[in-house]
Image (cartoon, rainbow, N blue to C red):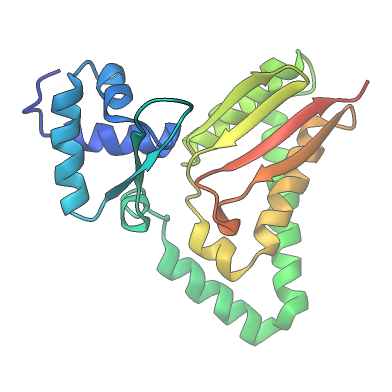
Length: 211
């Protein structure tokens, strides 16, 4: 990869978005660049207000500098149609009240369960169904992936394309957890362990088979 490639900085931002804080050496290794080349880009991104860094001590030796996205950097991964969505939510609340808004969320939840069940199905292993769910969510803009754990799996969503709406109407987040539970069935326990609205860099769900 050429260090003059105009897409390089976007790829660095994507790496930090999907993998979290990293050193310049780690960024460089993933993008087939030298540490020095990655650091030059990171410094430029820092000057633009898109990334920031801090030093972390790991055992003995010198601290290592880790780079992460700033709030402005996260904004490079847009919230789809956020202004229109917020307007609609405000209007719904004003016209129909809290119960009307809950009815809307419940309708959306039922529709999502039906669509996801059709695509994911009830056959196949839990890993296969989670992989199908992650692909669906990625197509919807959530940058989803599945990580195997000793006790089950972690469903990770590195981006929330409806974050502004979810911040204004947190019933949407509650509803999404209910959708996952309905789609994956009663044989698994699903817990949200990271939440963007609580300050985490991502949303993540621990998925554990019932033994």
